[in-house]
Image (cartoon, rainbow, N blue to C red; front, side, top):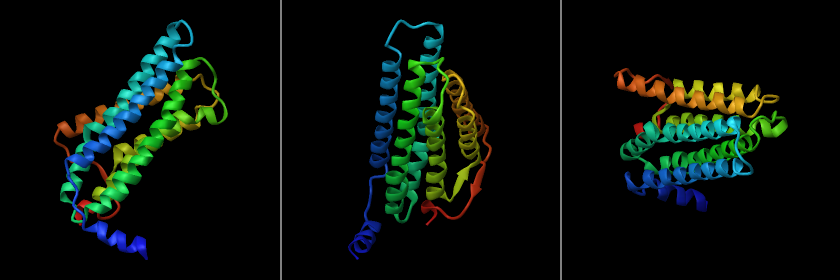
Length: 218
């Protein structure tokens, strides 16, 4: 009964719509910063040849793409949802707390895969090691679908497709050199962001898969 009572009390709490998204955004920045540390450590074990230098650059591009995916539209959408939701606690619990745990888990998995690729870019991946990078990127993108459903009741077509393509790349990763899926995922994330930027700037309506009413519509 205690969680139920506390849950009802939390429903009526007020949250700073500018401060809270900023704090969670910093949480994402810290997690992404750790990926860069891992990439750097993975590539400092010896003098770099052309393939290894290329892998470091591609891994850096992927990290930038993950940052772009969150801060281009995701952060502002979260702030808008928190400002307009009648029961902000629903967003704080489901989108900010649970959602950002999933974001960070995806970043951790992707970071492990990027560090492995940076250390041995020509090494053919097998087993669990082949799945880390792709599954992390897929989870990261898919979490945007979850948070948008919680906030607005619909998931973006572009991010649903992006998450599915990341899963496909993950499935075909075993047996490939580590650089191959890394490059494909970096290209996917950058293409996703470029398409969304073009689509929004052209003034077209967002392509959404509506599944219900989100917290911002309550």
